[in-house]
Image 1 (cartoon, rainbow, N blue to C red):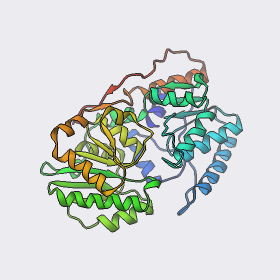
Image 2: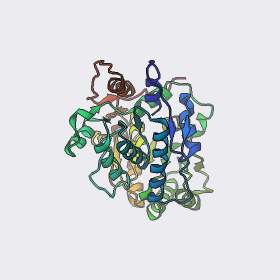
Image 3: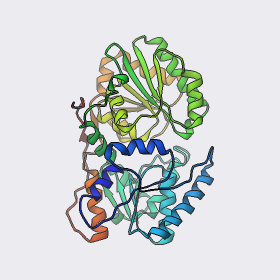
Image 4: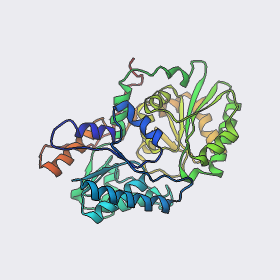
Length: 373
């Protein structure tokens, strides 16, 4: 959301305040800091080992309170889909226009990803403005009978943010993300459906890879969720070529992707970011709501089984043609102008400004393969 907030604040006429759900406060602060942003408001909804129903209920009550106190002209939301769905539902009840950034991501399977797929379907019908990152996302919304006049193809703001950070100077910690003597594999895991046995299998696959390839090192920023941390530390701590760390600030995450030879992830955002940085992405899921990178050949669904992970990583480590085919540095998710398009549509809706807004339609080039110093 940072590029959208910054773009909306460029012109007078709108008072833009950033509201955070309160989930993972430290990680949110880290993500916003490189953009000079912080939340003007923050909810208090987090509880230890909370259920989805409990979280959803607290979010709805908190959003209802904020809407009654603030009476905003519009809520624009992106991020955790349970938060987005709760915000959209409360706006619908209160008669407040709701805009959804990153709308229309679909797998067609309500259980995968869970609960994101259902949350996104609900929001598509509630939103006054749906900002779809790709033509495919727009098509998915229209197939669900979402009003065509509410849907706009903008590209994804994650590419805007990536370009902004990639143009900045490297952090002083960049050297810790890789060495010339070893090939670094960046791993991130956080999804609910990978808790338990799937994560154990992922860890076993990682162990087998470092045993098989002496020149490989693992860079694994560990999500703070205890369902992730407990298993990762149990299986992977103490190995000389497996570096477990706290979650990275966004600037450092970009540099970690830049230093990586291969990226293993179940993250949606990294599926979009890493291909733009010319890094092959192996997706630790069986389905993805971002199929464009898979169709382009710069990302591949490999699931979570130990053998599949080892087999697919091994191909990239031993076959230069296979590696180069995936490391082409293209992204079908944006051209760096998504926030500008979104801000223009919001201003048109709220202020009546009728600027001509183009749609993002084509596969866009990635950011430079090397981050400028």
